[in-house]
Length: 376
Image (cartoon, rainbow, N blue to C red):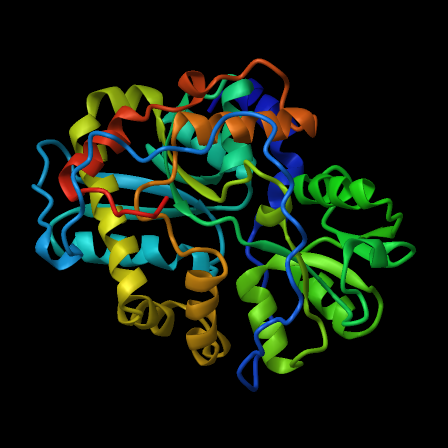
C-alpha cells in the first residue's frame, strides 16, 4: 500500500477512534427510561430539510419485495472497525442472509478509521462502513471513495451523575474525553461553550475505561454509545442518566455511512445497488419485527447484551428513530453535515455533496424497494 497515502489519512483520522464500540459493564436488570429531557435543538443554519427521493414508489412490505440478483461478482469484502456494537447488527443480519442466498460477502475488521480509509481507497475492501465525518476527511485527504447511504443512526450521548441535568451543570465538573481534539470532544466542547459551562476536561482513552471511571466516582460525565449507556443503566439503574444526545444539539450530524471505492463502484454499480436495496429491506424488517436483530445479538454478542436486548431495541427504534429505511442521504443532509464540520473546523472549507457522494445508486435502490413515508 502507498505509505504516503496512509500517512496523510492517518493525520486526518487519528482522533476519530473515539467512535469505536465500547465494552459495557454486565447488566443485571432492565434499564430505566431516562427522565431528563434532551437539550433544546439548535436551529439549522444552512440547507432546507431533506426531501424524500422523488423517483421512488411507495414501499411494499419487506417480505413482499424481491431484489433481483444482479449481474457481476457477488464476492465482496466489506470493511468495518473492529468490535461489535448493537448499531452494527442490521448489517450483520444482511451479510448472513445474503451469504445464504449465494453472495460471498466477507467482513474485514480493521483497528482504526485510518486503516479503513486506506483499505477502501486502495480497493482492498471495496465497500466499508464509516462515520460520516471520517468519510468527509478521507475524501478531503485525497481518498478514492464515494458516500452511498446512511445505514445507522447517530447514537452518541453525554451521560453523567444524576445531579447534572442540563448543560450549565457541567461547569467545573470532571468531563472525560477519548483524546484532545477528537470529534466528540470537539462537539461536546461546542455544546458547553454555547451554554457557558467550563468543565475540567480529562483524557481517558476507551469508552469502557470512561464508564469504569464514572462508576468509580473518578469523573462526573463522559460520552458513550447509547447501547453502552443502556448496559450501564441496567447494572446501576438511574445513577448515570443521559444529559444530552449529540444529534439533538448539532443539526447535520449523521451516523454510520456505507461507502465504496470509486473505481470499483463504476464497474459494479448494479451489484452495489442491489446490496443497498437488500440492506434497506433489513432495516425495515427490523423496524417492524425485533426477531432478526435479537437472533443476531444471541449469536454475536455477549450475554449482557442479550439480557439488555429488549430495552436496547426499543431505545434505538424510539429515541434514535431506528435504522434509516430510505438510506438517509440527500444532497441537503450532506450539505448540512459539511456545514457543521466546517464550522467546527473538523474539515476544511470547500467540500460539496456531489464531490463526496454518488446519490444515484440510492435512487436506484429505492426504485427497487420503494420509499417508506415519514422515514429518512
